[in-house]
Image 1 (cartoon, rainbow, N blue to C red):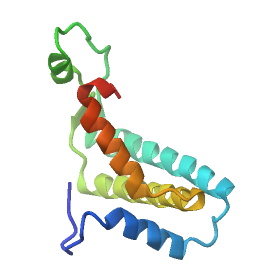
Image 2: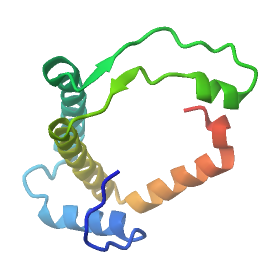
Image 3: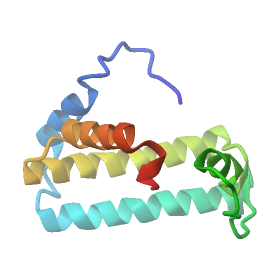
Amino acid sequence: MSRNSESIDENMICSEFQEKVSEVLIRHKSILDIVTKLDEYNARINRAVMKSVTSCGCISIEASKQKYNKETLEELRESLENHVNGELCEVCSEKIEAEMGAYAFYLASLCNTLGISLTDVIIKELNNLKTLGVYSLK
């Protein structure tokens, strides 16, 4: 994970981001626009990942059936594959990050429209993960 050289208070980053989204979003203010933009950027993320495989070739995908015959959840977690070989090149990584950033923009916008705190959403999910641990099975 790369970090910006500026010092950003990690506790405030989601709130600040959500506030800035609220300030700059003009054209796609309708919830109808927002949810379709989320779908659009989800597809753009997927497309950028696939182009990393098919056009650039910096990563490859070798998928096969996962083997779930382990005794413990720890053994299972360690044995399951993500099916990705290689590492994203700088160009592909930047493209995917840009698409993810746009997705995060519209996610924050949806939170604003519905009166939900993105920070609270992340904190609640983190607390669920901490409480349930591997038993969250996502």
